[in-house]
Image (cartoon, rainbow, N blue to C red; front, top):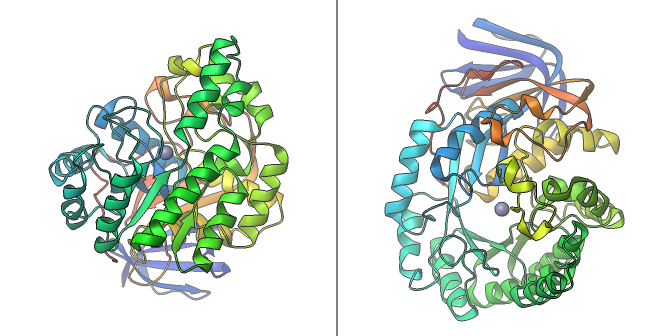
Length: 450
Ligand SMILES: [Zn+2]
């Protein structure tokens, strides 16, 4: 007899199974089927609600604003949003994850504070950082993250071309991918200085000072270095479809080149930046409505590796200035991720199987944690999100993070689903009303595949 039987409309990357079931023993899925099910000690019957793999958010930041203590609130909102694995970026305050010692310290915080499972990125110091690469890979990080743009010389440095070449060669030897923040420093700095000098600090200037060319020039640099060194280079976020076309061109030349979209680039536009002001500021910025359509063309054509949130919560008061350049860059997005992506697909007549594919399976694969994560199959962790269809709207006051982080660019947005439950390794951690997970219930997930 199995421990728990979960019933509902089971949605995998392959199929939508009405009257489906998932048998769970311990923390793992034992079997999946349709119709008659094996006996179980406990039955969770979700009726005609959709049961999908728990989402694997391949790109988010818990600790940019408040340090590792931010793991607690971000992962609470992840649990409420159906995200069961957070792949967390390394640009933390006060200390970025630049060697195995820092990584061990961060893992300690994950084990004390996380409400969902976490895989972790590592990065390198601006100078003399390459020698730490092998140790970070051996200690279980899922990917490296480097940047062509400097936000902070210590926390978020620009890696210059010779160092990047050396780093990519060392990363290639580890078999891990390297995600790169792709913005051209010189172009952005010149345009920003000119806007400031002219007193143009309203919201739209954020988009004007970071044009698509700033991204695509950086894409070319990183893929060229990837081609020479043999590294798998991944655009950490492309806000323009051209980024995926460039990645495809480099694959055609024999490179390992991929790119991800964030959900905001699939639905938000420059008009939203103007409407939201600081709360609509992220890097890269929102683009035009036409660009959003081109992003969907790239998505439907299978050119996007996966869709992430780039969740990077700043306290609301850091997003409130009328001077757009004074506001922090980053959005909240974990708790809205599953219902919003379901809604965007449904509004376009696309199958919810694509939610399982692009927000769970493919992100888990890139981070080397599939099929343990991101899959509903025998042997996988019993990580699940249950979606209830209906007419809802996103309410930022329900965000399960600390009060300063209870704001959302999606406030009031109509949604066609809500998260009715989240299960982490077989345990219900969100019941549609409250987070049931305790701090430390989440675990560090090591990369398995190389
Ligand atoms: Zn990011």
